[in-house]
Image 1: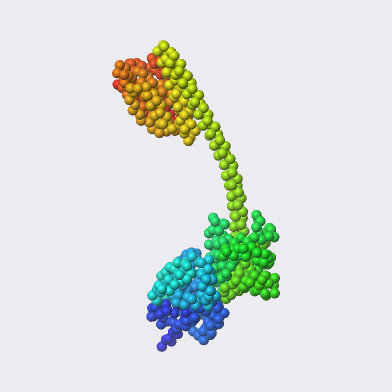
Image 2: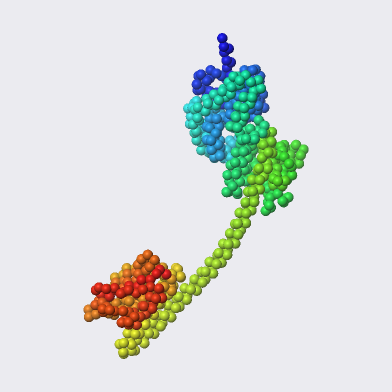
Length: 612
């Protein structure tokens, strides 16, 4: 008759006690559970002793550990034959899944499992050393952006308690639903590892070792050191990864590192010091680069802490400082009234780049692990800080150069404004001079008796007025280099039509013309409108003049038409036209255009020229 298989000991954190009761009955039948006070993870030595005693009592019976890396010895305790551990960093990661947990951690989240929420005041006062409500509030607001309650489904969501927590800490409280199958799946995987050892009857525990190595790969980065370093290795590696993501914002790196170290290690204050020179690591001086909380910056800039930072920088390894411990650093801490602290030298490529001071430790439970991990990551943090400093110096140099360019640009702009004012004055004076010439011609014309000569003077006056109008438009314009041609055409056409008995039909498309194109264009319009008024009236005494100006692809079209008797058959401007049309032909050539004669009732002359 086959021997009945022994039940597997389940040594579990009490945080999962009620969640375990919701698991499949058949799975629970495989285990003999023992739940340990969840708050023992704040006292790793006592937790390790408790698990040692429980495993010793279990003897050779198979055992599974439901503890994350918050139990520093969990990998050691549950390795070997008939042993396995659930692979997770902590209970929250197991409940929410690795990716979601990391997302929330990066968002600076403080977590409450159901059990912790029920006794949250005790957790803060007894376990975290934050019995002072104001201190607890300041600490959480400095370190966290939100609080998340992990709803595992074992109890109704404690809305009133969460509202009280939100009011106490001044942070928003959100609810995250846990993965209902995560715990069951993790326990079945651990059982499979234990069963695999039993089937193989492997005395040396190779299968368990392989399983634990797999768990190690799942719960921490490759190359993790001792078992005690697992959780901190993972968390600090995550810190490095997230800091590297700030490569495009190097100025934020220092504050970010200070914030994350303060949260991970658990200290009240953190100061980051570095060589203030352009090439960090070359100067004996130190400057405070980052302080958290920022309101304590003045303390960090004081002589005593600068001296402690210099002591730390000169050392090779991170070290623990106890006030009044007989060392110079300990004496300085005592004078400042600061509690037990850590000092971390920052060295890279043989250069002492700076130091980090972590003041007033809140929890010394994992002190050895913290110091060891900080020591191994010192060069990485030093490189990041050195790079951030170099980028900062580069940014300062770029900012200074930018300021110089802005000064030069303002000088150029001032010079340009001065030249614009001078150019406006020139256009104004040219316009005035042309108006004076026009007025002189008009006065002289009044003394003439010969109608033919008077007409010549009138035409010359009109041409001068057309040129003066261009300079007036430029003087009035915000752009001294270009004339708004539609406005110019309208003003010129209406001034020409003001002689009386002229009905004007105007359609001008907006376009900006340089002065060397606006003047000939205006003179062409002046000649064509004068001809339309002069010859279009005939015996009627009135005339309708149509003006159209529009863009057609890469060309402009200026058309002037009237409803008069029209042009004689075989009319050619260069041969049968007068002086005015000869001028138009010459101006058309200046614009690289062509003058076209239209057929039908009335006269229609069209100038087509490329866009200037």
